[in-house]
Amino acid sequence: MEIKRDYYLDQMIRRKGNGLIKIVTGIRRCGKSYLLRRLFKKHLLAEGVGEDHIIEMAFDLYDNIGFRAPGVFYPWAKDQMKDEGKYYFLLDEVQMLDEFVSVLNGLADRENCDVYVSGSNAKFLSKDIATEFGGRGDEIHMYPLSFSEFMTIYQGNRYDGWNEYVTYGGIPLVVLADTEEQKMTLLDSLLRETYIRDIVTRNKIRNIGEMETLLDILSSAIGALTNPNKLQKNFKSVNQSRITATTITKYIEYLEDAFLIEEARRYDIKGKTYIGTPMKYYFMDMGLRNARINFRQDEVTHLMENVIYNELRMRGYRVDVGNLTVTEQSNDGKPVKKQLEVDFICKRGSRKYYVQSAYFLGTEEKRKQEIRPFLKIQDSFKKIVITMDTPRPFYSEEGILMMNVFDFLSNRDSLDL
Image (tube, rainbow, N blue to C red; front, side, top):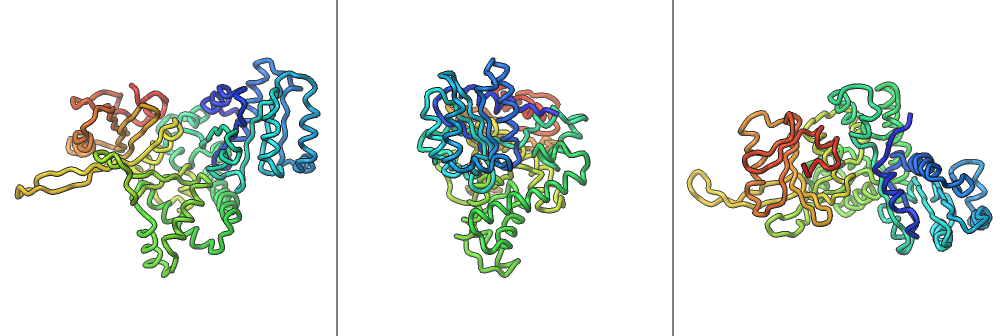
């Protein structure tokens, strides 16, 4: 079964022939190799590129072990180019090629070479990998399946699909598994044997238990404000651990480098500055998050908030958590300062949106609670409330766009309705 990844395929197509090394990054098993060696190759062939001008190499295969030496691969690569026509190099698991940065820069320096690479495991997962190419890297960051991508292969209605998606996530290998038991087993195995092992190996972590405990805590607190000092106190009270806030900060950075989690910083809407701490953390795949806590927690509000965050990031927005300080009168008439929160401030270029995630509005009181921060914001950028119970998109009398989560997820331009 072919899973369409048109958003990422379009990014690769637009970058054709730009003289840079196209680097597909992302969490392991999100579909990078599939995008490169199946979908993009299929596109090249459809465009009339000859098979002999598409040079493939999967460095993880046993047959190709010898090519991991640059002194073997580079001469071989040059020998494949028989004329002055354009050659497309599709190189998978490229981190297994010794001195791969120098080798790829050498290929990209040739006018008739267009180089595309993907990689995984600890060495290639770093969010800073593109910088290693000295300005010649062009990163395409890939996520697990979005909800709309997931629904293209899900056999059922969107409500059942939603329950499946927020439980088992969007890792293609897991999505294609036949039974719930297989999905749970795969997620548990991937988390332990792939993601955690890579993080431990790459960063030479000695106290694996501490890092795994931190992962448990973050898994149980998606969408909650926290910081290393608060986490340190949690470790001390629950585990009698002497772990320092500095070590916790490092562990969080390791998890971010592996694309398991992302940090959403707080932004002072009135002051137009970032607030140091606390911040929020979201998981890049809900299945991996749920597997970490043995599928015990099913907080629908937090799960929807995490899915919305991921969707916004997939669409290329920079996403922050909004903080708004207001002064209101108490019952006795005295001024009281209060902190209001906007779930997400989304920015891309000159565009900016304020987004609230509210699973159910239900009552007028709940509706007023959700839009309250919006009414205190003194700018004209668009304000949106995403819910599970809005029948169709409409604008409230306050000028706020009310939208169902399915309408939001099914249309990449939904914020502009």
